[in-house]
Length: 262
Image (cartoon, rainbow, N blue to C red; front, side):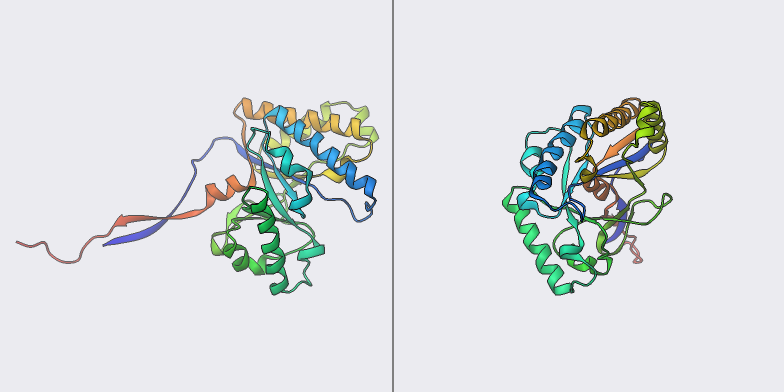
């Protein structure tokens, strides 16, 4: 006979573990066609910044069949991930379980049609933690949650799903921040990389004043790449966090209470 026990995948590291996710969604005030087109262009710019630095990220979008990142990621060798962004428009707290399951299934179908598999659901201004059983049935293994605070850490919860809370956001540099040059940005990155963090940025913040804001982000990502090269941290996408923390069943022999035959 064998007795199953639970263990966890993934080796420990002396440095911190950091994840980046990029939300590819417009703000509620950004509704024009030109802003939708600019979001597509900005998505490519952001993707190039992360790809050139060799830093993986999780890219979240609510409509997978129309996102600019889907085709662009096919040409990038870095360990990027595409995740589903749960927004109030289709996954709000007033949406029933039945409707949520239907909307989720349609988006997973869109992902398959585009040639990739969804493992992560990022929650943006919604909370569907009561529906983890629905997510598990569709093989979603990671959820990103908001409002947990800086001390919260990734953990495996019900149905074998890993919850990764947002602990920091990449700020859009103000005029005075840019006057201070890159020193303040580098200092901010060093603080983030010194401990475990899940860092989020919103692509919509980069639609205006694009050059200076993207330049600040380049400094940010380059400093993150330096921390990785120096062994001070490991950067993962969200699916990799789920794989590392996902419990697996390992069979180990159990002792028999019967005496051996003479």
